[in-house]
Length: 211
Ligand code: 0O2
Image (cartoon, rainbow, N blue to C red; front, top):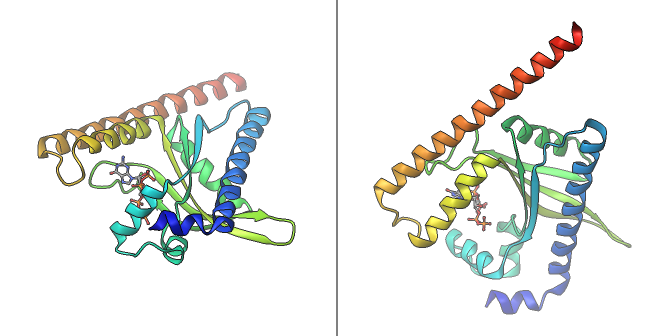
């Protein structure tokens, strides 16, 4: 049903495609700029995707909306999504600060599941925004979602996501849920440990430079 409607709406889909191109190119440019200027980029790697029709349908079903264009526009704000992976937790917030400074992004909402992890143990920073796409005769703002997280957070999320296929949500045995929460805590400790080591190295290097 939704597939049929979306196929009949190529202009809107084209806007989302353009937004995905713009987003990917912006993020790659930021990454290059950081590397050239500072010798270090907070972006370890990144991926931009357009949500599959199946996935859009599932999201609408989950939220109780019927499958039509209007509901997609209003309620599926992650149709264009980027996932940025960083090495360190501090880098997540460097990326957020950069996005907040830009005029071609309008930040609508920030969901900080790092400070407030989900009950499952999921940690990540979600930035819901609009990206400016400049066309020949008009400028359009398209909704996007950028998920920013460390390698450790991503390891947990990607692996847990795979397990959900084996045990669709709600059916995960309690022991497995507790196990996943414990591993999430371990991944948090990994992040904290790495950040501590990094701070010590930076401090030592600064002290040596002053000597
Ligand atoms: P996909 O394939 O990753 O896109 P929203 O649906 O965004 O309007 P909601 O449901 O509150 O509102 O969204 P939330 O929880 O802020 O963000 C949903 C996305 O976060 C999911 O996207 C996942 O990518 C990720 N996520 C949230 N909770 C978990 C979790 O417990 N485990 C894992 N592995 N990922 C999680 P989608 O749309 O489900 O799928």
